Length: 528
Image (cartoon, rainbow, N blue to C red):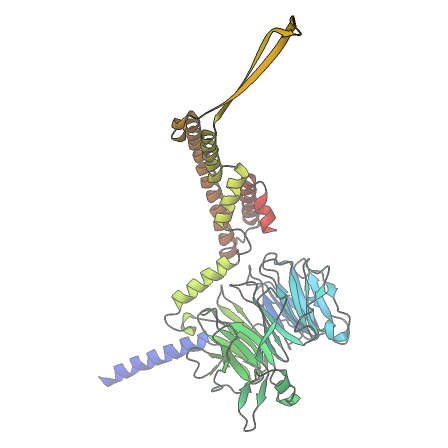
């Protein structure tokens, strides 16, 4: 009786372990890579089969998910390593590569490359990180070993940020997906935050120093104390991640472990090192279901609330030294760039905490609509259409007020009388003399203060205007939301067929033109 029960339990145990192992197993997708020391990678946001990988001097590309690779560019010179690759989300043929020898750009999916930035010094030449502005992808920010530079025209002209971090080594730049004006920058001195789209920065997290008894201390007491710290005791932030469940939650991956702020950078505390073989964090990513993944020199680890212990993800990962992680949220997989190749892990729903799905879906919806925050909302668009058609309610009120003022003012009548007659002078009648008189009369019709024929005329015109106004509002609202639905559809379910993509783009332009026709071109001026 016990033997069948034992076998059933054994089969369940083995199946469960196989399933969990499969969900947390790395797959080597490095076949065909001439360089195995991979420093960075980027996934095409439209087609996840297209991946770019950066090695010591070569940029590689795959169009089949890593089954085969081709070289698309090799950097010349002595300092050649590829530090960062970023793909324009609105035009995936545009790819940027940050190297130790400047910033390179391809506008044709990697077929040809041009160096578009090399700085004025060796420190400015080394690009550590690239950020493409979510509001306008022509705005590109690069973190160098001597400050942040940005362009507003996709790389033609560059300017250096002259602010608190102008001459610092910038390891990482991040933009808040829910508030595009909020930037974070990780430097050798700490984490800086901008709330004005990168114009100015404030230091919110200072480098970590070892106390006398080996305790780690978050120093926020000012530059005077920080200057006393020894160079070898400073703990550099290498990466920043934002929680996908709580917009105010920020993570900093440093050489001394992972720190968390739950109030947008005001206060920080350290997440446990329990389970971490090496607390030198090279990269951090936050998943949609609340899990936090860290890359270290001793492998990849994950943790979730309440952040009690890290779990190592080493199955199938031949290399321990992991430099970079990239997460494809839509297709739910991770890439790990290591010193021995590029690895892929498909995630399952079990990799997230129970009960987080609803909160995550809400955050995803917020992130999605955050993509359109640079465009006018429906109320602004309706008001623009009403102004252009001159059918706003104020115009009707002006008619009525004018009629009331006319009723208050009196009717003015002016009369002139002229009389002629003989006049007597010196004892004799001399001839004719004219006599002119005039008068002014003011009259009020008190009944017009209550109602006039003009009011009847206004009522007729008002009804016609209200009807026209309603028609315009209905049409502009329909066009606006049809355009927004098409935008969301193209983002969440992009068509793979070229003709379908062209058709949807033309429809988007047609809807934009329809809104412009009702607003006098105001709408297109606002979305430029």
